[in-house]
Length: 432
Image (cartoon, rainbow, N blue to C red):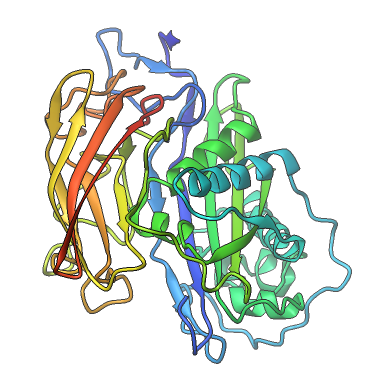
């Protein structure tokens, strides 16, 4: 439904991912209406849908081990001793069980639909996720941070009264310390932490529900290549999410504002550490529906140039839903002859490919293994938006909404065996 004046605004979705490993091992379509900030029309009022869905902004994954935490604190964060006391009688934490379940179910479905094992619920992981989500909520409900690392609970200089162990939900500065302080013992095979945060602002009482927000935020994770691959770890078999809502400290002059925080934890166990998948794995895969249409931001930026500067401004000129390709049984793969076809319009979409041989992050923590690749549709020529974007933005929103796409390619396995792969997936509503 289109409206004649701007009635809502949504801040960017902030998505953060951390992988916690031991030294010895490795290891959006918003589900409803969507909206965007728009160019002014002749009446000087932008025309937008009712519910605002905006681009994901994804932080760099941080890798640490069990012996020494290598995460770098925010510039304004003061160092604390790792054994700072944890309040054993904190304020009772909040959690929207239904919204958290939606996030968990979406991740489970994305995995099982494409051939990976499902994820069972881990209440211990969930308890750590709930406490950390409430830590973040407390910070943003009582302050407006200028710098904030969502994975850390260290004291920050200018908001010391709501950070560190002054926050009633303090559980430990780092992810590893929070797990240790909570007595979580299943860390030896790998544990991941994914965090999404967003704020909706409205001049009317039309803030989206937690359930809608949770689905949107989860789909944003599944559209960010370097984070998608962590959600599709074949050996993971346990998970738990938390989801909290809060009233932002600064409403920016809007009548209503609502913030949401999603924290997802997943773990590999000794029973699942050897789990794998046969053949060529992709996400999306055959039969997947309702993906976002566009990727508007990710860090690390998949369009990193040789000097480290991005060669593409995804916020202003997005790409379509990326494809992740993995063949765990192979040492190397080489993807070729890729065709990304809009079936309805009989239109071939050009692509950019990232693999071991063409990797903007070769030699870094983000380097792709030789048996993985990303296929990214370049949607520059499409007119896929259904509402105007601002003047400095292209009027394309990635792939077309509610449309089927056939992706086909050949895979040379270990430089000797050529295989072919083809599947159809369908986008959801246009995401802005």
